Image 1: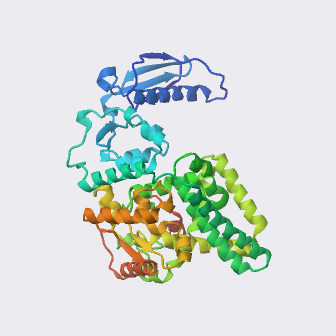
Image 2: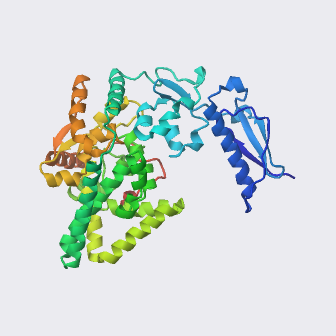
Length: 488
């Protein structure tokens, strides 16, 4: 009996009632299965690129059923009980159908699912290259009956439309273009701190070496962060900097970090909030509480210091599980170079001090700000970013360097692909924008924002339990801090 491989058509396939696929010079037991699955995937992508409507091609709710032995694929009707709803989102005031693009999305299906029946304009512009943006017009339009009501997805606010005009203006003025001076400055700073760490280690001053290596490692993280967000040939070329010099997987970082950017402080989605039971950012329910909560404002530096150690472990796991050979090679080279230069008594303190520096810098801008407990897209994107983020002004040049541009978190969250050396000038532009639209622009001093964070942890420590306190993560999901601090 022939073996049939069914590949669900999630898009709008062109009218191919019977397709014969030529044999290719592939080998192995799964060659035929993979060949016909790839065929169905290719046809789905072709359908998306055509933009033809379902009515025009007459293939709504169809499946591709491919036979491995006869080397054929047929289009068959999906039974009503198996038919799925269309997945639609709004981009630049145009509703598009992403059902067929869902499985092919490079960053994963979860991104598409989170923006079903929602406005994705800002994240589309904020995280995609110019080449990707050119493909927008090729996405198929959503059917009128699939477009959600105003109640489900309201029209963007005046502030959001003004923000889109501002973004276009900044693009035209060249704010997103990188310059050699800015790039050289960041790289020279990292080279200088790394050279100081090496010199101190060779001189036998291991304490100074550990401190300088921690500063260098934190700096490497900021540079890698900038290149991972950035677009263009230079950023693509430098994307491996994260593994080679920072010891962290670019793929792992993108998966984790971009979701934090898109849905900042949305409880249950933003992984940066998933820090319990090490720290609690709101009143937990009795079953999720931990006795350490009562003293969390005293020991907060301990879990913070574990940040880079956990990230490094997670990076290796992701690179291995996904068989990212290029990233694995660069990670191996990173650790080999470190092991040849620095003794363990320098490496271990440096990793934990670097974790403390980085965690302190990034968390003070968010965890004391507004949290969104009702799910995503309940507040307009621009307002949500300004309510969940706070800038801080550094009191000296050393703090400014250590912050790596993350003291301009509002600017970074609204324009993540912009080079960070443009943020000081952009801050004045966004302060004016916020004032014109009656949105609070939150700015503290460096020590003031740290006190705010510690006071918030102390406030949560003293509060009574909330029987309805929400979980920070979906059931069954764990993070590094949960694995370390959980009593179970």
